[in-house]
Amino acid sequence: LVSRASSMMLSITDLSLDGNGIERIEPSIMLLTALTRLSLCENKINRIHPSVFRLTNLELLNLNANEINKVPGMIASLHKLDSLGLGCNEIEELPPEIRFL
Image (cartoon, rainbow, N blue to C red; front, side, top):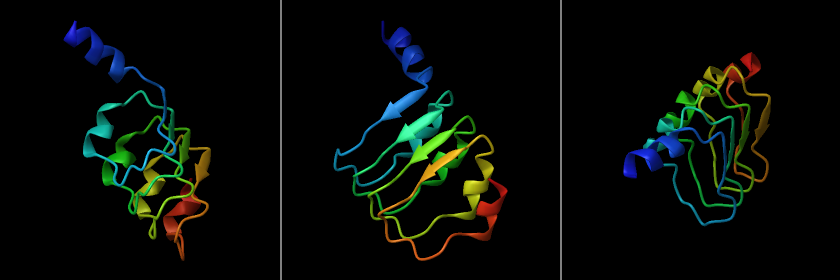
């Protein structure tokens, strides 16, 4: 039963954890390799953990209304990304690599 549940978790394509008071993105998020949509709006996240950039199937990444102040250049590794939400954060500038999205 546990291995079946684990298998089901790994096949999740859409994960929305909006408004949960989440303060950080856990490195284990990278195990969800099938994710195409990840929404973590209205939380308390202050940085984008590098493990997010291993989710190469992401088409939507929504981090609106958090406390993020920097977007790493590694964001460009998300080649399938066609929707990126970073509104209502504390970002002052975007990395030059963002042009490759």
